[in-house]
Length: 94
Image (cartoon, rainbow, N blue to C red; front, top):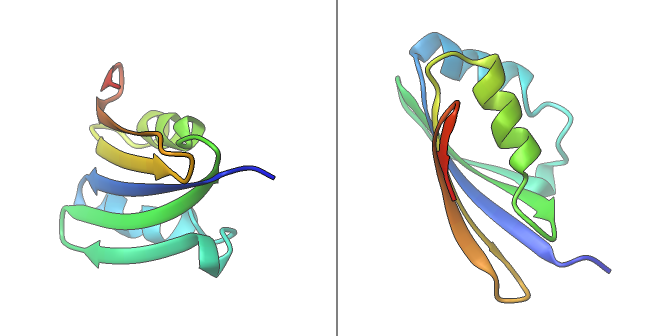
């Protein structure tokens, strides 16, 4: 059985991008795996579950799709591993 990995993601983007992300990107994620924490005019904070490791594909997908997006993913998994991924498209630090 895989370890649960919880991703605490902050996204900084334009107001229009925030609205689009909220209404289109997480509609198929089960309710138990997604928790919207805070929405502002230029920022979005949520928690999302992934299997074993941080969902790097999701981060890269969002960065590729939305121009000038900034993202921070603070993650931890139940096996004791944790980390932070932060940056913009082409400039991510792990």
